[in-house]
Structure formats: structure tokens, C-alpha cells
Image (tube, rainbow, N blue to C red; front, side, top):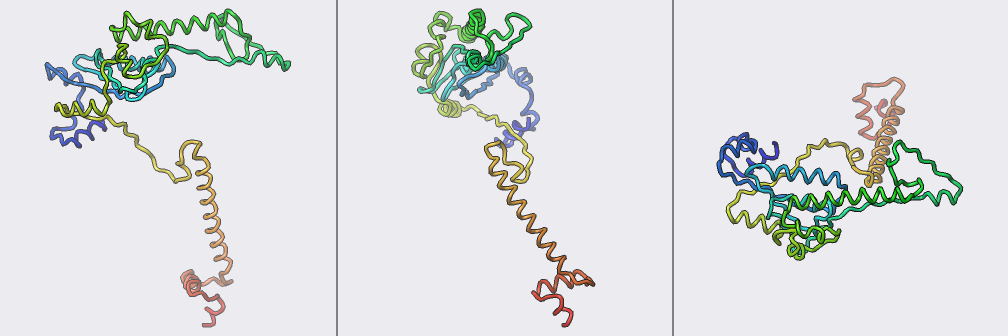
Amino acid sequence: HRTMMKMAKKLGDTTNTTNFTQSVADRLQADPNPSIEVIVLLGSPGGSASHYGLAAQQIGRLRDEPGIKVTVIVDTVAASGGYMMACMATPGRLYAAPFAVVGSIGVIGQQINIHNTLESWGVTPLVFRGGKDKAPLGMIGEVTEEGMRKVQMTVDKTHDAFKQHVVNARPNLADSIDSVASGDVWLGVDALKAGLVDRLITSDEYIGERISEGARVLKLIKYDKRIHLPAFLSSGPPRYLKASVEEMRKFTLDARRVVSKAASFVGELPDKSPDISTVAAVRALGVNTVNAKTN
């Protein structure tokens, strides 16, 4: 809400900013022929199927809103989970730069097993399961044919679901999904021929094109309100730990100097302490307390 208000002011909108941030539903009801386009600048090499699948569904939810077009543009890479998200663009609106890397419609599972190594050192790993298919392949347990089969079955099922997801999002790939879902990747120019993308264009070119057509383009910026702390407390992640320690060391040394000066000052006070203004004046003139008294 705050971001949209800022954009409204920046663009010189003379209407109330609350109206500017009204819900999409209100806008669609007010306009019988709405024209709202959401441009997603997507770049990702992929990751967990569960997480990317959820992100893809969120894009799909937006795409399915009446009167909204979702344009996805890939400037660098949309592979595996990245393509799982990218393919959720409104049909015909998935764009890529000529040398962007696209595809990798596949699934991979990897596991290190040290069971035999442990046994060679006289260590016997013990694994207890509640359910025969629980964690069929682990790090220390014995590798079995049944365990390998079970893991491969899970990978294959996930791959089948991935392919169906792509076909549902891009029906034009229904007849060629097996050939493009081999896990291979394509450059943008080849991805266009394979039907994985719909147009070759960079995000800057496309946005500039829309502006030249008279579209009002707004950029959504994430705003984080930060709390300012002393440098040695706000240096951030562990890679800055050395700098934080150095800041703390300097702070400690400075504190010690202040304490030392104060102790020296107190130690030089006469037995019958005069008022503090007299002592300060004597210290400022650079004479000792004895001379100050005789004068």
C-alpha cells in the first residue's frame, strides 16, 4: 500500500492516493474493458519443487483474475523451477532474451551415502524406521535395491507432475512435451523454435515498447524500514564479522582511554578539593595545583 502511494505521488496523480490503491476487483467492476498487465521479470536457475511449485501457483492465481494479463520476461535464466514459474504467463506472453537459458524441465535427486566407509572403519550404523518406506535412502543406512527403486519412483512421479504442469500452462507443448522435458536447456533463440517461449525481447526493450505505446508503467518496489544501529552492531552477515570485531576493539580502546583520563584527573585533585571549575581552569592553563594555590 505504501509503495503504491509513493508511486502515485511520483507520477503526479492528482486524485486521492487511496483511490489509486483500490483493489483490483473494484477497478475491474468500474471498467467494463479493463487493461491491466502485470510484467514479471523472472530470473532463476530453479530449486525445490515444492517451493517453486507454490510460487508458480501464485503467478497462475494472478493470471486467472478476469481482465489481468501476466507477461513473464526472462533476461538471463529460467531453468527447472524457474521455468515452472515462467510458463504460468498468460498464453502467448512468455518472452525471453536471445541468449537467456530456458527449460531444464526435469527433476534430480542426489544423496551421499557413507555406510560402507563407516563399516570399513569398524563403525556399524543403526537406522530405525516407523514405516517401511520412511527415508528409503539416507546418509548412513545401507543402500538397498528397494530403497533405490522407491527414490527413483518419487523422482519420476515428480517429473510427470512437472510435465503436466507445463502442458496445462502451455497447451501448445502437449504434443512435444516428452522431447522438451528431457532436462535439457535451450538458448532463447532455440527455445522460441521449440515453443518454450513466445517472443525474443529483453525486459528493457519490452517496457520501452509499452511506454512508447502510451501505457502507464509502474514499478513495484519492496520497501524495508530499517533500524539504524551502531556500526559494530549492524555490520550484518557473518562475512562482516571481522569488521564488526575491529569496530568493537576500537570502541573498547577509546573507552579505556576515556576512563584512564578520568582516573588521572581524579588522582590529581588536591586533598581539599576546590570547586570543579577551579580545577578545570588550572588544568586548562597547564599548571599544577601547588602553583595555582600560591598564585
